[in-house]
Image (cartoon, rainbow, N blue to C red; front, side, top):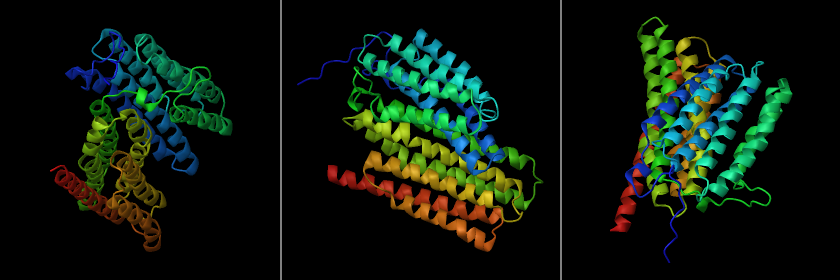
Amino acid sequence: MTAAPLALTPWMRRRDSEDGHRVTNLELFFDLVFVFCVTKLSHMLIAHFTPLGALQTLILTMAVWWTWICTGWVTNWLNPEKTPVRLLVIALMLVGLALAGSISNAFQGGGLIFAVTYVVISVGRTAAALYLMWGSHQQANFTRILCWFCFSALFWLAGGLSSGETQLALWMVAVFLDYFSAVVGFQVPFLGRSSTEDWTVSGEHMAERAGLFVIIALGESLLVSGETFAELKWNLTAHAALFFTFASSVAMWWTYFVANAEIGARSISTSSDPGRIARSAYSFIHVAIVSGIVLNAVADEFILSHPTGHYNGNAVLAATLGPAIFLVGNLFFNRVISGRIPVSHVAGIVALLALIPLSQALHLVPLWLASLTAVIQVAVALWAARENNFEREDKGRLAA
């Protein structure tokens, strides 16, 4: 039996056309705001590298990612080439700049600005999208989503008016509600819940958008390395430290794009339930991938600042946990999109975690630490790409 055609509005993408899957220039322009956001997040963690600072940075990172990925879902359905949608994205950029600017002081007395800008983006974007999709198959979905964002907004705003432990607790509840709402299908009394089958997405568009954010995060790592290196005396030690931190960023790129991203795009494009994969693999799991890259950028700053200095516990934690969290995210990403757990990722995580006690026992200077973490990451990247090639060859033989 042929499925009924989807109900669309004039502002929505047509999947039967090339524009229905294409990432537009406006979306790339929109991403520039989040270059600023990622920069502010990494600098915040560098300045407050404590358990509390890490928790605060994680909350803000999750909020920033949710802001970006929810906009990605909206532009997956709405066509940014249409004037009302274009104006909506530009308005979100403007408020997003204020959001980025408030990150540094979000837990230092400037919480209300962050909360207000976050709520304006989340509630305003959803309300505008609901208006532009009114009468379409997404009307019920966005009605439920709007209800949940309005509910979490109460906790964001209350936290913005608070300080200390109260602010932290309220914002933890707020970010939990934002993510949990998607887990339960944005279920609302009397309105029911959405199923992932209702979330008809363009797999190619979603995969490319997520990949572009990973590029943004990796770009921040390179930016931190370049800025710190520029302040050093140019000698063999400084160049060696730059080489190893650069190799770490390249290995992350290789692991994600060469070993994983192609499988992800292919899997979501051919899935009978692309909404389920998009929600799990891209909306949720990518938080870990991005967080790992941000933490790795922090490690680059610690290492390059004093490459031959004394043992640095903060550098050890950042240089090992950053890539490990990144690999954990990639591991779960692979599990969702391909059904397998890469042995390379498991081995890399174990090796990186083993470096923590080893570094402490040997009192490794930052340069040696950087070299070891880079070697592990490069080995994992090459191994993961080889695993991917074997899987592709096996599927090719089965298809033949």
